[in-house]
Amino acid sequence: MLKDRLYYVDPYRKSFTACVIKASQDEKGQPFVVLDNTAFYPEGGGQPSDRGTLNSVPVLNVEEVDGEIRHTLAEKIDNGVQVEGAIDWQRRFNHMQQHAGQHMLTAAFVELFELPTISFHLGKELVSIDLDAEEVSPEQLEAAEQRANAIILENRPIETKWVTEDELEHYSLRKALAVTDEIRLVIIPDYDYNGCGGTHPSSTGQVNAIKILSTEKHRQKVRVHFVCGGRVLQQLHRKNDELTKVSRLLSAPEEGAGDAVEKLLATNYSLEKALAEAEERLLAFEAKELANAQQQGFVKMIFTGRTIQQLQRLAKLLVAENEQLIALLVADNEDKLQFVAARGNTVTTSMKQVSAAALPLLNGKGGGNDAFVQGGGERNISAEELLQVLETSLVGSN
Image 1 (tube, rainbow, N blue to C red):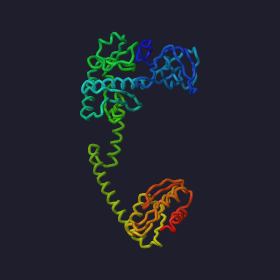
Image 2 (tube, rainbow, N blue to C red):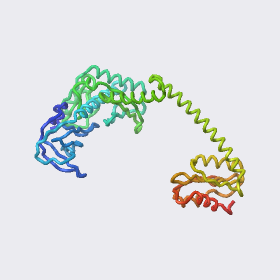
Image 3 (cartoon, rainbow, N blue to C red):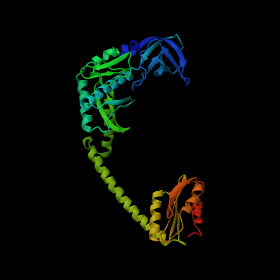
Image 4 (cartoon, one colour):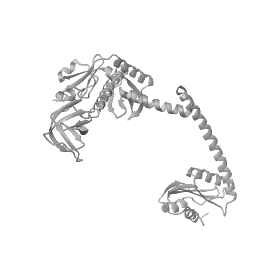
């Protein structure tokens, strides 16, 4: 029976003795064993499985398959062998804290705002719940967090009880149950009554603290990311280290780091704007010089270290400078070639001829219209050869 499993009988149990009643391997060829009883919690209900060892052999995963608990192992253990199991207690207790904290936070959202949790995930670093709501305000998040932490400070007992379906009417459950036999309730008296198969500490105080970190939209619901217990300190240490680093880089006190970052961003924005304006003036000057040096209605140039966006702006400036021009520009950058072709308003030749001739040679992609095209691809030919192809595709057409 479920209630006889060691991880339910005593979730604080760190070691145990058992006998291997089945030894096999999964579809990936990984060895696993089934024991006559186990203290290893199998993955389920949003909670990951335990880790540890059996006779010093690492247990890589634990899952329930067709009613049997399979312990996936790093190496084979034979059938009939008696094993000494050791639970990774730090991982187990971490999961107990997170799962109990989830119960309290979920109950707080229900109690305060009638917002039920529709899913729960216990990750390696963060825990998340999906609330059945399209929006949750910062004030609601803060209130739920405070309520859950108040329950922790009260150090209420966390009880587990096995009941029958007929006995459920005596409990005000937070949500309906999907099972009808071997029903296990996790109870925080006068606060939360919920069917659950996970492991939990014996009192709310052992969760220590709950901290909501962020929210995001997920399938039109609100996903709340949070941490409990030891993970709160881990997050605090991590964020404090980052804040210290930022403070040092800004030469500003930690309390004023936010203001210093805002000033830095404002300065950076001004510099970027000024740089863009200066670059535009330089391009305009360059376009005037190139237009004056045109030959037979063409401006043909190869550039290195120029982006396709810069070539696009230069080409537009060129044909604006001289409406009778055709601009053929090539960017020769590392492992790719790119091109831009543009015509002035008085030119009738379609620039699509350029793309049609160049793109197959480059195994490339491009787009545009009769007046302006751009594209690029692999360096299958030289930049000089590409420029020649661009010109040849238009000779006799303009």
